[in-house]
Amino acid sequence: MDVSTFYALFSATCFTLVGLWWNVVQNHADWMRDPALRRVVGGIYLSFLLPALMGLFAQVGGTDTPQIWRAAFIALSVVGCVCTLRLLGRARGDRFVTWQQAGSALLYVLIAVVGAFPELARHVELSPIQAEALMLIALIVLGHALVWRFMAGEGRAAED
Image (cartoon, rainbow, N blue to C red; front, side):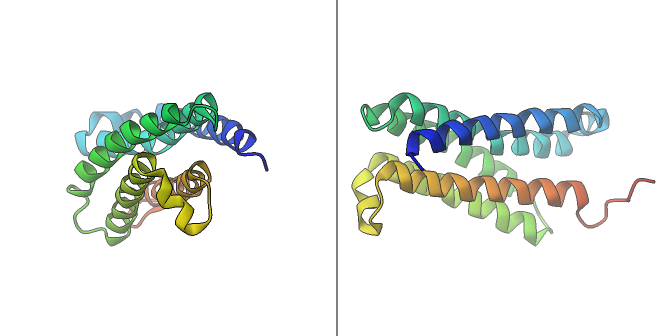
């Protein structure tokens, strides 16, 4: 698949996930009243929004103007890492969430590093934009895992 086509589909999919998440949130107004839940809801939102934005910048920059996507990936990864680390500090007691958020923070760091030093991707025989794509896929998988844990995790009562 062409990398440009991948990022077009990836961005559209991520923005769809953002919309679906907000649809879920609208049906649970109580989540927004509790500060701890609101932070988790916002974290899940960012886990889909930031990769969607990265995908858009990858399309705009592409291989012709890589400094555009590289700068955007670095900036958005810093935002994602900081937000994830703030949530990580509040995820006490739930090992799954702790590992998920630590994995996400690590991926954000790696995405920023490849954005800053694209030649590192060549060590694994990928173009920098391909290496970034693989890490973004992993980030979305971790985001889905967080949604699953949040929606169906331990201690959540099943609705009749």
